[in-house]
Length: 562
Image 1 (tube, rainbow, N blue to C red):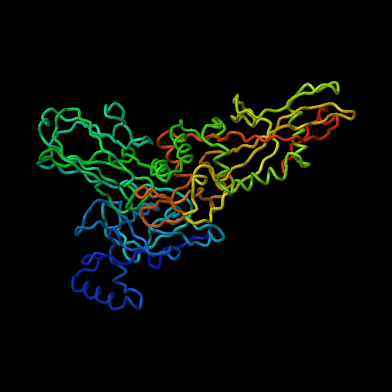
Image 2 (cartoon, rainbow, N blue to C red):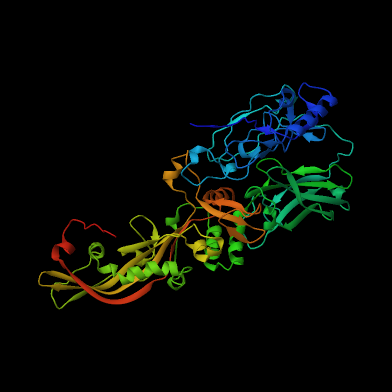
């Protein structure tokens, strides 16, 4: 498999001004700095001494297939040398440590939409390492390289080798426990912020009795891609041993860029005691998914149907089986769908073409009538009704999926496909609610007997929309890992209540089906379901003849829909 090699070199710039691996002397460093500045415009090769310079947090990275330079985030250690974190061989956890914006230009993605670099970066181990050690790990130097074989993946930072902490004079016990809570009672701990109408988030603190009357300072910290950020802080008096603190966690959390999932922990300092961190360990942080804010973005844009379908999904028990649940005519109406000219055009083609009377339509309707197992008329003076255009009662089709009554014997359909190569101004509620869907058709009428067999008289046809509101990626794509990527759903900005086909700035986050899948996995909510509109009924008076064998023989007539 082709690989891209980050060795041009991978880390350039931002070395410590006074620290090299095995090369002492500030005078020598000063000369090297002057030499680099003089030759920067000519892009000449670094000297051997410069190649040995140690790499710090935030240093620049080069990749031949990235749109621009990246940066390294140090997560492998906590030791500050000259007030800097130094990168080590432990900083190789894919997009956690190597941060590139823009798309990946690797040749394996030729002929398809280029994915964002940070969603496909997959790294080997570092080589050409330095000799110095930081927390038992060799440091990276400017000559260090790492290989990348881009494949869709996710990563988390590795564990940091830790030394035994030292006791401090002001390290006093004032808090028994502190954790993220599901509500103000503190009864249930949580690590996720689910979808709900408000953004209230709770921290429950158990103070020791001696802390009552003292002040505590609380900081909420967001762990972003390159650095942690205090997003909220306050000072409060300790009034009770058991204290519930709440604050609103709005979409502004995602305004500065980073991933569409932010993890939070908090710090508490009581009086003059040492500030302590809580829920910082993996598995204890509070995960906040950007997708929980998407319904309110739709609501702000007045995309009513998209909002209602999203809300139904978020409120459902976790399920990736859309056939287990159906919304029939409660949210989507045909009048609403036909209000969009691009959808109306497909509907008009069905009506004007009288597709219920084309050869495929006649054959498919005959097959459906036969499946109804009706008692056929035995004399020309009798008629037997067939079909229903009603939504109720809800039924289960032959695939085991929930469906309205009308859908059991639909016999024609036409697909509607959205055009995604449009400007942002063209995005509307139909994109948000349905995107691609099908118009289906069923019919009602009567069966009459004639001299040669039977006459099928169609008195009314009904057209309705059927769609699947789910976030399932195609199995064929998943089975092709070299080219697979989750279906894109646009770039969403929670701070601007906006969505775009492109990232306008750092507040716009790339959302895919996998974003919703991860929310469902973490929160245990989010139910895929089928969507059916109400029925548009059209009175007709059309008829065609069939032989007795076509309605009564023992072999099945295939339903051919064209």
